[in-house]
Length: 228
Ligand code: SF4
Image: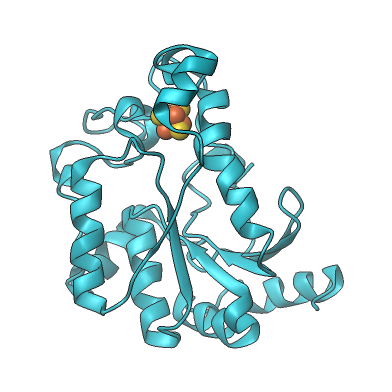
């Protein structure tokens, strides 16, 4: 088991390492005790590609809120076909109907934090409780909350090691990797959606606007609660 001092040392060692090296270390170190939480954004597609090359048996899961775009589901099928893998679908037991009965219709329009807690954070917490480490595709320049993320860190919220292999990358680095490796991506990215989540909470943005400004429009919210 890695202790906190080890984690800081490893993070320092990997600060300038290529992401593929970090991914290889992560899957080799944690084997069946690590999983990658995939949202199928451009960043996460790069990580999927790296994981398949480093350890195709590695568990890759996604949070199905029952509110994802049909284009996202189509992309999932395309990726499974390309890589010959199966993504694990993780979802809350609370159906949309039960949620509406308990909290009112369209909870995301009145209390998106609660909606994200029910549909994303709670099922993620349950999934992570079975693991010793998880991997994410976050980048430091995406949000202020992510600016201090390390390549390897202790996730105090969920109580396990968190590995962020492309934390130093820019959006341009991500796109370059996608193009270079011919990785299929969500067609909505070419229709003004740089960041794609649930359908009711994702809107297109104009060129030059903050890429995440199309998420939870009208609310100060910038994160689902997975990376705070
Ligand atoms: S992104 Fe929106 S719809 Fe999806 S879980 Fe969060 S609040 Fe609910």
